[in-house]
Length: 218
Image 1 (cartoon, helix red, strand yellow):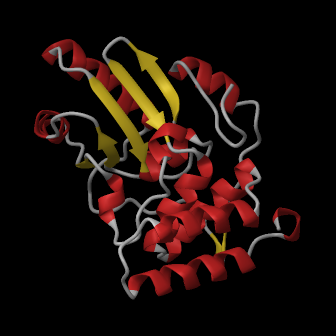
Image 2 (tube, one colour):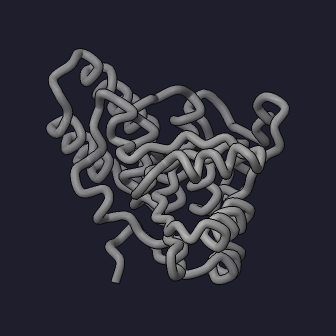
């Protein structure tokens, strides 16, 4: 069985059935309530459902297997925040990046992919985040995974802009993540990071974020 705070969904149709059972939770920002987010640039938005269809097409056309750890706004959609709009794909890909990036770009979908999302910040991801990730979809030659919710929160707090805080707060509420779980994950991330003054800013971001949590999550 998956660990507490994680979930496994074997295909998109099953996910949709499960997601409809939960009421929509509108994340409340530390600085206010976020509503529908404006579309960035003039690119069309993309949904997790459309991404799955595109990846299925890519695998069928190229024969190249895909193992994608989805992060960013598309992951947030899969956690239940269906109004979280985006026009790009963020994720950690096992295997060559260029063929998939070229394919998605040709389909009008910008992609920011890496083989190590921990390298996106001086602050490392908590060790073991890949092992804690759970399957959103697992088909032959196509696997899409999501971070454990607490790891997603840390990924957002590593950058810590207002929109990231909104995203992190939604996930904390959605999965009832405690302050102590966040603090422990943040401490593990700091311990795995190279010494840098950026760690002090991250630590302060975590402290500020945790102070804003509702009392029942402390």
